[in-house]
Length: 325
Image (cartoon, rainbow, N blue to C red; front, side, top):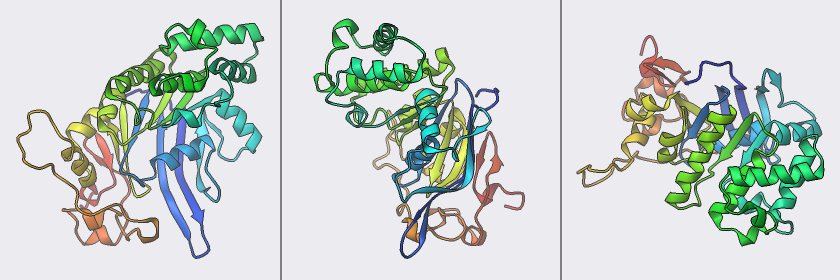
């Protein structure tokens, strides 16, 4: 874990979706930081609020979604309350984004070279010839073979893995300080996943880029992340170093996640599972949101929401680790 001051600070973030009947809280009081050169993995089941947290950070929440409380700071400067156009410039220049489906990030009507050159020209003070040279360099950096030929190809002429590499090249074209990667390996086969993981790790190590890696794949997290934030029902359940989260999880939900992962050589007939399902936004229970599924719950769990308590090397939002728990 890096000891440097956080590049990104998320403080008490709350994301709401107003409806006719009520206001739904999708992300509730989430706080964390990411240091330069650090990869923070964000994991949890579908509906946990992982992607919404990432979208809130980069300013791409779809209406009626909104940041209702909290702050997002980049190098100490608050960015969540900036005008749309100023945030757009920051998003391109200082924050890069990588999404699950590369086709949503690439314009099918333009060559990848044209898209890379436009991105470079928009955010960096260079001329067209220099921008094209930088585009070629970026394609080579992300592992596109024969970049001199492929730069003039269209997105449909690339495989899924190669398109994802192009998206990464676009994300780092303006040398951002932060990259938010939302399920960047989900649609790829295992060998291509490994190559994308290597790219993200090198990005953090060689460029000092802070990376927020959103995924449901604990294998990807184990290979890539320095720290892990486990989310449940829009809240942080546990956060800490990746080794401790994987090998010594403390929150009952994290324990359940780790035990549900198949392991080579394991002789069990059935995988362990967490009973029940993630609560809907309209029916999040009082107290700890995980309490209906928790095998260790007691009365306090159903009454009062726990904050993050020190739990060994991690911090867990569980009353088992409070002073009186």
